[in-house]
Length: 430
Image (cartoon, rainbow, N blue to C red):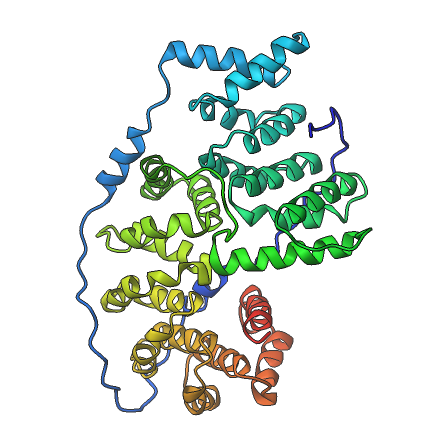
């Protein structure tokens, strides 16, 4: 199926994920002394062993050299025909398309085409990515979803992503069904996707039915980060490492936009990105450790295997509290004894992080401690807010709910964080 030549631009669908930067703000500005309880005996931790990694990442990123100049010229000429930037007859266009899609260097021309200022080029480039059989193209497609405003381009990018083994775009595809301008295209592609996955549909499925089924596939992706039915091309391990290294190496700079873009892409890369992130946790450069922690937190349960590598960071004064929150978000239950032992930590940020993580992990054995922390006016507000959140993670609690409502009514706590906590509760307790 080829994209039509012109489709009006709908508004960009909004992804369902809440911002995961909010939890990091919970500890900022926290103050207050320890709980007054005797310090718990900390279970032993694996040793913290850090080593420089920035040079390694830079070298890996540079290893992904572009094709030679003559080859690049050939690919650009093919791309101009395939992207319909120059006129050609049908036979020439078909030959150019086969030649381009069969060339391993096509990424060098399709990636920039995805960011073209011409919407027709972006649409066709997104469509071509899905026919390329090159899974590495999922990374520029993911970045396209961050900025794309054209409804049809979004739909083609989402479809191509799933063709390359990444189901992140299914949420965008489902959302596109709410726009009259592209819902027919989105619905047609959705039926095809669900049919390929052997999902039974009614004889005349509604958009609501399609959205429900796509949501189930999205939920499965967010739990696993892989497609159980995937039979497509296997990604080249060396090329993947070069790509991921290029995204992580950006953390050394001070330009916020490239760092934000790298995090966006990595956080939606599924299980593919986890091994490199786990390795980065042992970087002696704190900015690399912090970036890896941020992305792993956003990946959530997909990154469960990172748990053992996170535990040594509880000894790191620079990233320990961030590691605690990550342990909670990835659902690493083996961390519970270590987190309980730090509920009386002298540092308010650490206490707040441990309370929040134990709430996400639904540690009912800590409920009495949560109640004590919530009721203690001497605790930092961060700790008390997280204690209320943790109690609500365990079930209905009128006192905890009233405390959060009071903060919302009095506007005496960071409102985006309160909003994030409410959204997070819906996913913890459902």
